[in-house]
Length: 339
Image 1 (cartoon, rainbow, N blue to C red):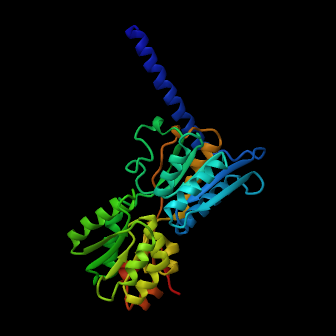
Image 2 (cartoon, rainbow, N blue to C red):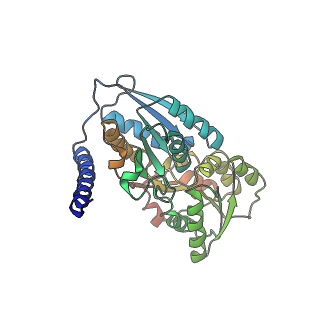
Image 3 (cartoon, helix red, strand yellow):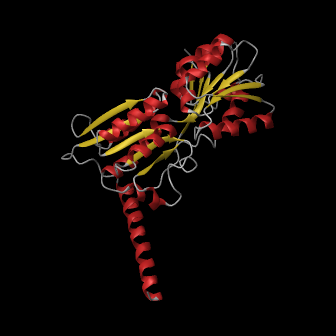
């Protein structure tokens, strides 16, 4: 094989790759609507209903692009409710439905679908994944990703900031309880960031490992007043499910702050939340899904980081636990819930 021929092959490969990226950019700038004459089938899978707003935002985003449920798109939906065994089962069910594309959110659910879809070739679009690269969901080399792309949520990157914000909300906080699953690709690295940040700002972190969400219920049942000053979700979807189910009531009982991730969780009973805007991230992911449904390969679409963050405070919960939130903190909030 001559040197000239090798160079020719290399140039051809570069041109083909560039053509794919160019087609993606061209598509992304035009954002064509759904084909009204085509009927789309989209599988939906999530780890826990606590991220339901992300799913809602995704469907709203597709509707804005012309995908009307019952007219030209059909959804097949499963929610594992924080159960890993149910997650595996539902991932297989979604694959067996043979959709045109699968939308999935959170790292555990995305990993489950990726494994189940490996041989199917069904395109997968993910959302609410803290570290797509670190979790092994996508490769740094775009072409290696083949049938998967989506949006991250950067929760590992903002873990330390969330702890600092909790300390600013309630300066009395000296000991913070966190739950996480060591195998989780979001919760474990986020917990490590929180532990390191705690040592720098004089906050002791009490890390409790779990293997199922019911472990949270067991631990909280035996937790007494004065043992910790606050509870925080490090960004582990299993922990999110458990804290939503049992942590909110326990935090109010002990009169301590609970820091969560979404405005929905804040409205449901957490004192504060700081994270991505779930609905907006869902809509952002719908733009990517629109490209995939219109024939652009996921391998030609880079995954994206969130474009919008959201900070919420619940003054009713603050009153219930006897906390006055500083005015400087209230001014930072995107949403202040008063009743």
